[in-house]
Structures are given as C-alpha cells and as structure tokens.
Amino acid sequence: MTVQKGQDLPLERPDEPDGRAALFVPTAAIKDDVLNTVRKGAAIVGFGNHDRTLTIYYESNRFNEVTLVKWEHKARKAFERLFDNLPTTSKMTGKMDHFEQVGYISNKGITIRRMEKLRGWLEKSDALDTAPESDTIEWAPAPPPKKIVADD
Image (cartoon, rainbow, N blue to C red):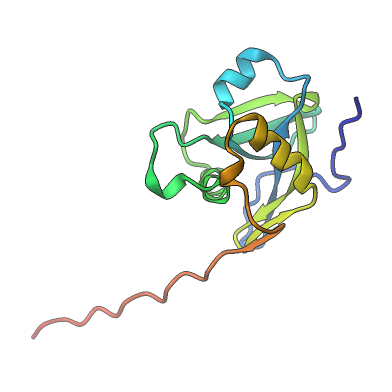
C-alpha cells in the first residue's frame, strides 16, 4: 500500500488569513479505536508536526445538525475550529500512516486533489451523497457588517 503525503503538507496551524490546512481521509492502516473516534464520513483537516505525526480536527455531525449534512460543510466547521484554535473534543494527534492527504482547505475554500480517495472514504461510510460536486469549492464572502444607528 502506498500512501501519499503532499510535498507541501502544512507543518503548522494556519494563523494567517490566507493560511491553509490539509484535508485527510483515513487509510486502511487506521486502528479501529481511532476510526471509531473520528467516525465514518467525517471531514478531517489538519497539519503535520515535526515529530512525523499529524494534528487533526474532525467533524462527523454527531448531533445531526441540519447545517452540517454536506461533507464540505463539515470540513469548513472543522477548519474553523483548527484556525481559531477553539477548545474541542474533536481533535487528536495521530500517526501519518493512518491518514492520507487528499487536498487543502483555507478561509477561501477547498481544493481537492484526489477526489477518488475522498469519494472512496465517503462511499465506505455510506455517505457518498454528501460528497462535493466539484474539486474546488469557494466560500461566499462574509456579508459586510451592519451599521448600527443610535436612536436619538
């Protein structure tokens, strides 16, 4: 089995507005306890560490939120947690051979480089219907802030 890691695997938490993280799917080498924690169909984002491990954040929509049905929405939620370094139980450090990089995610959107691997993960998870329709997904810009007008 050959597992590909991107030659430009991000090696730190993206803390700049244009920073990015990697998108991962589990490999056949993943241990059952790790897979049970991450849960099937999860979106997994993260970065490499200097000790050859990965820090990952994942979202599996455990509580069936209607806003997290699609895989890309789960990926965005996991990335927001990673980017803002929010406290969460949906985070772990894992072995590189348990995960395979399939693309990138940033504040601008998602770029999937290995759609067949992502679709394979979602198919094994019985969640193929949540797969993205294309290999690039751009986020809509945030709406401008509303003006607050003081009542006199």
